[in-house]
Length: 345
Image 1: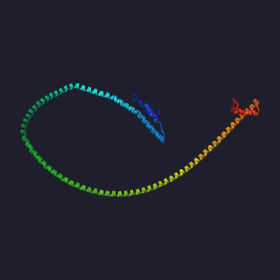
Image 2: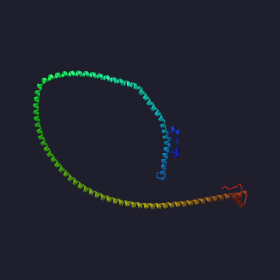
Image 3: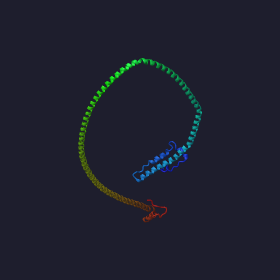
Image 4: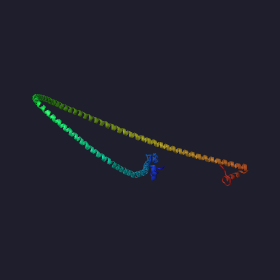
């Protein structure tokens, strides 16, 4: 998984799934994808931006290559579990039904016992109610007979008290009517005074409103005049400011253009100077190279001459050749005409 395409073309076989799709089983693939994402292309270039797109596509393909077989494996697990779930549900439902049928005999018996107990309790309560009603009827008859005798004795006293009550009630009625009349008169007087007061207050309120409206109109007029003057002043200041800014902008642009022209001129001069320096340096390097080559050739020639002189001198002194013979022998050896001999420079 060293290439960005390795994960994208990865094929996970079904027998590999149980070992991969477990807790932390995909860490190796995640590590490879993170390593892939560490690359930092140059986003300022089209090539770098295209590379970023390629990396993102590779990551997406890698994700799909891992996720798709994982989803298939998960679906397989669910399908494998579904028959077991169905069979367990059927078994549990059947057991519940059998248990309920066993308990039904006991619950039916208990319901029948509860129903019989309710009937027995109702009969007992009904008999008790009949006894209570009979005792109440007897006590009520005795009370009615006693109350009738007392009522006959109380009639005369009641008549006297009734006449006194009628007199007191008449007196209270008269006093009440008199109090109502006084209250009506006082209320009418008070309402007349309150009405007059309201009219005075309403008149004062209208006058205050008219005065307030006049004052508000005057304030609005003054505010409108001040606003117009302020707007005119702001417009003038804005125009002056914009004119000044335009002038400053023009001066700045002219200054910047002049500075740019001077920079361009200096850069051109500097470029020419650098070109001249580079040309001079190339010329000096070429002269030095020629001098070095000439010196090397001179040194080689001097070295060869020294070797030749020493060899010729040795042939003359050691072998006893003449100078001409020694020179010819040296040339023959140098030119390779003499087998198995050579000159080392």
